[in-house]
Length: 245
Length: 313
Image 1 (tube, rainbow over the protein chains, first blue to last red):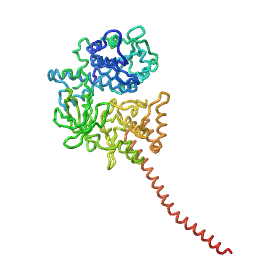
Image 2: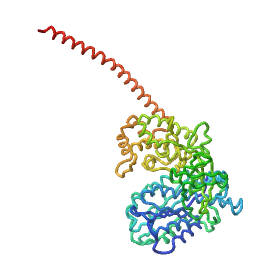
Image 3: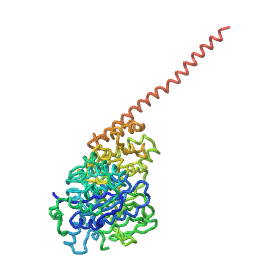
């Protein structure tokens, strides 16, 4: 069973954007093109309160149709994989809801069904989550304040690829950092099914103080091969009927 | 309500005496207290018709539904109680206007595995491990991997002591990717295997569960040292586990393909120990006859000396 390909951008950051367009607007643009934007805000170990800048984290994820989470770096590995999975389920549920509405009428969604029927539908969603292919563009904030966290980020990404590669469906990852030396984003690791190779490239990243999250997101969006991008948000990336639902 | 799926649903916290009434089945539960919190929602002890039940609620509807599916599937494994039995599934409209999914299961009373061993001693290690492996074997044969096996998810009911697995949040169909795990018990974290759902994934966790009893504060992987060596060292230092060392080591290395294989090894060990113990007991009993002989011969020798001393002028 081929369930099509899910596309995600995973943004890892520890602060607020301070240059270029509003990242939330770019995220909603990406979402319209069938890309889900997930955001993880990383706290310093000694930060006890959530700094104001991290409100942006939730805003970006909400307009990007994805999931957000703010965590201390020690919890990063588990969070990264949980967020990615949750977003996959959420996206698939979105497709199923759309189907339901077209069959049962405008007001129908999974939440409005009784628990019994919801359970049956959830099994289909789970099946899809396990078997569909996944493409993730990882976007790592490499501004100066991230320096101490990069080792943890590396471990978390390695861990993510291990989790996802236990799935039946195929995975492809690529990693970009922002800001790049000359452009908004800079390639760290090109599309690859595993993230084994990241140990070598990772510790080298750090750069100046600016955080152009918006422009970086826009650039990340274009890393999904252009012909696959959907112009029209009403098109489904895969045909649900074909998958047995 | 319109933006149901787009706005993030806030986490929910129930307080004591709060009433939760289902939207579909109209059953009403009164909260007593919170008894657990996991990656997905919290579990509360509640009263329903004067009877204690456990209620799990979460802001993640999908995750709740998935767990309910697992519980329903386990129910079908006949004649065997795997996990808590499911009593009700419903939705609740919270005071904040949002709808939260919840399910209700039997309330299981018991001690945590670690506390039980602390209180009743290491002689229970083997027996409980056999029980745990038996349950896992049933689960595996039904086509499931428990997944998030950890000390917190294992209860020991008393009279007679019986292992019960709680929280099926990580329970995953064989051959898929593990849904939920806890780093310390996850072989992926230790780079000693994949996160594919298969029996050996659970068996690794079994070994870690027993190690955890002796390292209640857990420990972390270190960058310099291969995990296999580290775990071996930790295993070696837990003296109470000495008898089970070869079995635990084999499980950590992923050498067991089924829970039954591991169970057989544990049972052999238990028998060996019992045999050795009974032999020892026999020896002790034999020894018990010695003191009589000893005292007799001593008194004999003493009396001979006494007689000689009497004869002496």
